[in-house]
Image (cartoon, rainbow, N blue to C red; front, side, top):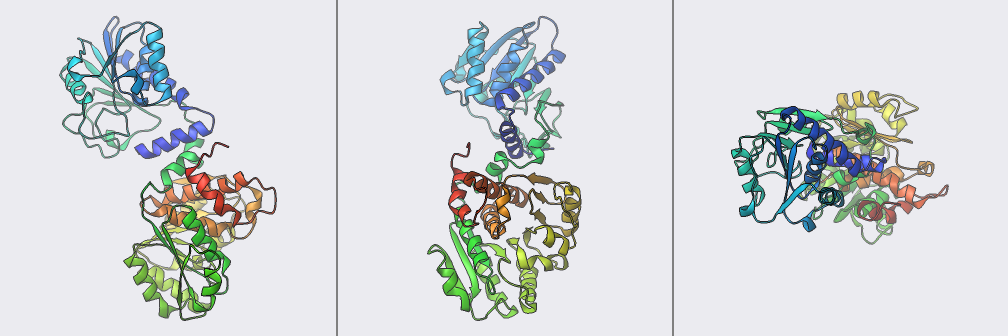
Amino acid sequence: MITAARMGAVDRNAAALGVPRKQLMESSGNAVARAVRKAASEGDSITVVAGRGNNGGDALVAARFLDEYDVSILLLGRPETISTDIARENWEALEAAGYSCESVSDSTDLDLGDPEVVVDGMLGTGISGELREPEATAAHEINAAEATVVSVDVPSGVDADSGDVPESAVEADRVVTFHDGKTGLADLDCEVTVADIGIPSAAERYVGPGDLELGSPAPGTETRVFVIGGGPYTGAPALSAQAALRSGADLSFLACPESIKGVLAGYAEDLIVQEYESDRLTPEVVEGLIDTATKHDDVVVLGPGLGTADETLEAARTFLEEFEGPMVVDADALSIVPDVETEATLVCTPNRKELAEMGGPDLDDLEAGADEIESFAADLGHVVMAKAEADVVSDGERTRVSTAGMPGMTVGGTGDTLAGITAAFMKGNDPLDAAAAASYANGRAAERLDKGGGLLASDLLDELPRVIWGDDDE
C-alpha cells in the first residue's frame, strides 16, 4: 500500500530516473482502457468525463485506445485551464484527431448521454471531500446513470488515504489504481485493479527529488531548532545550528557550556547561544534544557561536539529519558540510545563505526547491508540514518537508500550539517521522510558544488537553500 503523498514522490523520482510523467500517463491510460474493455460489449457507448489535471489526462489517453466503441469525451472546464502540459497535449490530440470532444464550463450544460460505460477521470488521489461544481453535478449524473462506472486511480471525491467517502463522491463499479494499492480503497464496494505502469522499483528504493519535496518543510511551517552540543568541540554544533537555519528553521538556538559561548556566537550572528554554568553538559543542567525545549516545541539536536565524559553521557541519558518531543541524536550521544527507554521521536544518525558501537551491524557496504540496518532499526524502535558513501534510512519497516553526494564528503562536519537539516525537516513530517529528504539535500548540495577535493562542510550551507527551494535541475 502507498499513500497519495508518497505516490507523488515516487512519480517525481521516476521522472528523475528518466521515466517522465508523460510516459507514465500513456501507460495509465492504456490500463484504464483495458479495464473498460472488460466492462463493455462490442459497440457500446462510452462517455469519458475528464477533469483538468493529470487524472483527467489519464482518462483522455484511455479514449484513444477505445476506437472500437462509440466514445464521447467531456472535459469539465475550459481547455485553456487544463493544469498540466501533458494533460493539455492529450486533449489537443483528441481534438486534432476528430474525436467527439466537448468542454463543459457550466454544470447546467452537462449532458452525459446514455452510455453503457462511464470513465470517471475527474479528480485523483490529491483531492478529496465534498465535490464542487461542475464535478458535483457530473458525479450526480454519473451515479444516476444506468452505466458501469470505471474510475481512474480513485473514485472522484474519495480520500485515497483514509477511505472517507463524502455524499457527493462517485460510486464506482471498478477502479484502476496505479503502481500500488491505496489504503483508502480497501473498504470500497467495487472491483479494484492495481496496474503496473512501468515505474521502476528504484523510484521507491532510492531517495530522489520527490522525497525532498515530501520530507522538506511545507511553506509557513514554524520551526525552532535547539542544538545541545559543544564542550570539547565547537565547530560541530555551530554547523548543525547553521544548517538548520539554511534548511527552513525560523530560529536556531545553541545550548553550550559558558566557557565556549563566545566562540560559538562568533561563528554566525544568526545563532542564538544560551550558555549554562559548566565546562561540559552535566546532569544538573538537563532539567532546564528540557523545560526550554518543551516550552517552545523545539526540535532538538543532541550530540554534536559534546564529548564522551561520563557525566556528559549521563546527562544525555537523562535528557533522552525525559524529553518527549522530536529529536536528532548524533555523534557522541548515539552510544547510549540502545539502553534508554524514551517517548521522544528519534532519528539516529550514526556513521559505520557508530552504528556498530550502538549494537548494529558492522558493515563495509551499508547499501549491501540495508536489510540488516532495517532489522536493527526495528529492534531499536527508532529511525536510523546510517551514513557512508550511500546513506541507508530505515524505520524498521520501510528502508530507503540515498546515493546523493561525492567522495569529498568524508571531510569532517558533513554529518553535523546533516543533523541540522534533519531537525529542520522533522517539524510536521514523518521522521523517515524527513531523514531521507535531509540526506538527499545534504548530498545534492555537495554535488552542486562540484569540488573534486577540498570540500568544507561549511561550503554546504550556502548551497542548501538552492537545493531545497531553488532550481535543482543542474
